[in-house]
Image 1: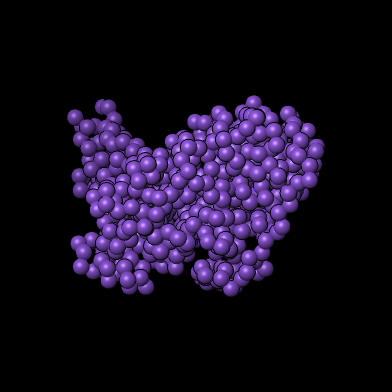
Image 2: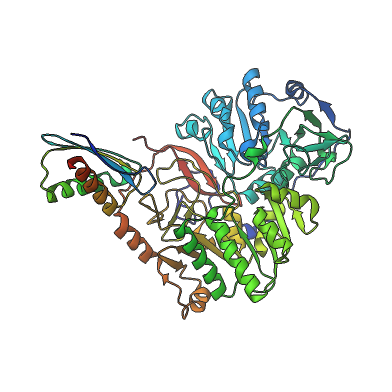
Length: 83
Length: 505
């Protein structure tokens, strides 16, 4: 299966790259990591919980996206992976 | 001890005591010494170093009118390296990314102290890493003029880029391949440095205008090129097309209109950034619509202001530096477009500084806090990204100081509980305009009253902070480093804040 990718590297956006996996594994690279790492991790975990996804490799390359953008990009990446 | 802005100042350093504290001091002026001999012309920098002479421990100065096209500072740095000189203090009026060689000089201890008004680019990196053995002192543009004329910043040798020079050692900023226009920031160095070198690539029989008086020049160094014209033009001299920036500009102009600041004879300054120019564009259309003519616009001048002058919207332009080549051409041909010195521009002790006559100024911020304190020196990590330049000078002088900025940038709230680094004190700032509302400092009851019945989105700054936090979340507090690497000086030379080595991730 191909990885699912969504987003851009514009300021205020993020790119998510997701791959199937047996457990959740989340990697975050963010320009605001020092200030918002925990909140970004929380948004990703909550979104995966809502989608009942227990296994996924998630790479988040963040350029200062707000929570709703992170959420939307993550969902889109997952849907593209499944397509 | 704590200074008047609540920041801890190390013992022995003069503490900021309030924006008007300078009024209880009198001006200190060194005498200007016209030279007894005509300047000597050289074709090698090494020969100038020998003649001056440049030796260990000296203070060397430069101006930044060639901005990111500057080759003069870099050539002098290369000669310092070649000679292995030590313990020098450099005092350029600004440091740009092109001055990367300075990083090497700091690393190796050739340069141990740096005093400047603005620093951006690779030269900042070793300073942030704690490699500068002495201190980084950051002045305002007006404060640097004050420091030099008073002898607080004594300059041994000034290397002043001069786009064209005549046989008598006079310099012009508007001729030659590296014409950059006004040479306002070079004036204190020219008049008070112990040894003055003009560096030029163009020697002519007669100049169109004299920006640098040859009576104060000891040596003229003729080189192939002093600067790259591409780099001279400031990066951001176009009106923004970002809809958020345009909304901020529209609201800022509407605010100024509502409070009656745009009226016959008014004066203004904006930066050359995209949002600032968009404010100018809004003001321009209000002036046309209502038939209003202003007295002057000042500061770094762009072609946009040249057009407004030529359209008859202002009586004069007062130009301390040209931001583009259209401004350079205008300065050369239009008598109403006048070059001014750094001192006339913003020195608190000048008899009538231009900044004090401003009706309003539009400025930016990387951070602004609940006290309206503004940071334009570091980012929220404490990394060096700029400096006051004329920020604190114009903010103090102008009757209305407007800060325009997005409420958040790449998620980070620009409104903070407390700014990381304090550049301009809140007492010099009046209004914050963001895309999500306008906050007026509570003690400007005149501005609050004038906008009470307007449809402007007036809110408190606390409210704007709440909105930012609702959008982004509350950012984690980063402890600043404990090691002091320098100080931010207010325009009177007092310490308004310290610069700390950023904590490493």
